[in-house]
Structures are given as structure tokens and as C-alpha cells.
Length: 122
Length: 107
Image 1: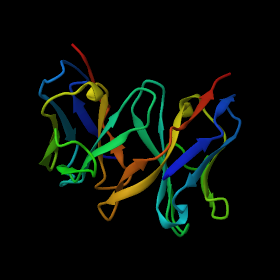
Image 2: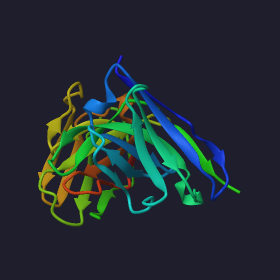
Image 3: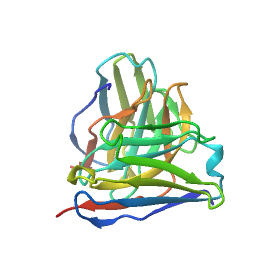
Image 4: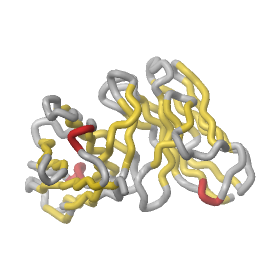
């Protein structure tokens, strides 16, 4: 079955760090461009970061640039999002998503998991 | 970033109704527009891409039209499974951006 399991979310204080994981099964992560997309409680969707299939390209939303780092472990078939200097506005459900239909510059997303919830509160 | 504006934000309807949701882009995005449905507590599910192409496995009651800056999603006959929130997304340029969502609720 093609799916991902996101984990690593929790309740943290502002200024601290958290590392999210996205373990894939039924497919190989390094064959796809992978993304993190987040959704604040009761709010809309916000793209966060992407990693190209070969790992050579990484991009971030302006809101997280310099604080978040995307990475991947091919042996574990797992995608990560290291989140440092967390802010209250980073509180959200975080989804990892597979890029599916591309315009050549950007793409749509196939969400294969249920997300992991990050709460940032003092 | 390209701003995506959806309307209405909430829509009340009954099973069997025809419903239409509009999405406007702050600049032309050609036909690089996708629609998702999100049920409570679940991840979004892709319904339509390239403004009007139905994703594999998606029921034919869903359809999309538009190009440039104005797009619509139509559900021809609303089913119980369709009471959810719908989002549009542009994928013409980075960063990909989403509309604010349209919640379809039971009348």
C-alpha cells in the first residue's frame, strides 16, 4: 500500500526545535519530489518546503527560510523537516506530500498520510 | 506570491444540489490550477488539475473550468461525501499558493 506516516509533532515552547519525520512505504522517496505543507488549526494550506528527487534542490517558503531544514534518509526511506527557532505561528498540522502533476515550474500534491500536529505555546 | 481568492467562504446545500465554487488568481496562471477536497480531520485529496482534468478515480460529478485568472469547480449533484472544505491551488509559479477554502455545509 502506497502511504506515508508523519510523526514527530508535539507541544513545544517558542524558540525551541522539533524534527518531523515522514516514513514512506510502497514507494521510494528518492524517485519523487517531496514537499511539506502545513495547515494552521481552522485555517488554510501553506506550502513549506520541497526536496528534489536527487536531493540537489531544496526550497523553502519565506516564512520558514533560515529556520527549517528539509532532509532525507534513503536507507530509511524517510523525509525529515528540522524546525528550529519555532514561533507560535508555526503551529499547524504538517503534511508531507508527493509531487504529482507538474507545470514544469511547480506542481500539485498527493497527500498520502494523515499529518503530524505541532503546537507552539508558552 | 500569487494570491488566490475563493468564494463563497461557506456554502449551504442539500444532497442532490448543483454547487459552484469560484477561485480567482491575482495574476494570470494559464490553466495551472488544481482543486482539492478536504474532509474534517483528513488530508486534502486532489480532485482536478490543469483547471479541468479529473484526477484518476475522482467521480465525474466533479468538473472544473477556467483559465487565466478565473476558475470554477462544479459538483453536479452533491453527495453526502461532498460536505467538506474545498481548496484551489495555483502551480504556475513558486511558491505554490492556495485559496482560503470554501466549506460546503448541510443546509
